[in-house]
Image (tube, rainbow, N blue to C red):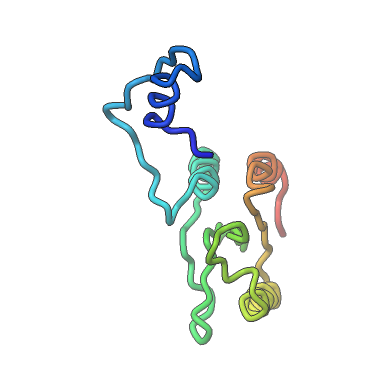
Length: 138
């Protein structure tokens, strides 16, 4: 059952629930574009606060047109968000997973390190970035 304003008003009118105070809609409501989503937005915010120089959609292979979601080139560090929880995730199909493996293997062979996140572990990036700033890659 979806609880929305119309249903609550109907149930109140029928006497099935007591009076419900519904707050007004926010005047300046911020809508996060679906293609970004709250998980990616959090990762971007953490990277911005870290003051590490990062880039989005870094193309690291010209032939395969592979890109990292985010990268810190001076550290050869790639950061990927695996959208495995969306309805149209290519990450969960056999061909999509195979392509991800090819991408990550090629990146590793070219000297890149990877941090990978999902909706289940995206909050870990805060601690990972903190540790990264205390660790020197050579």
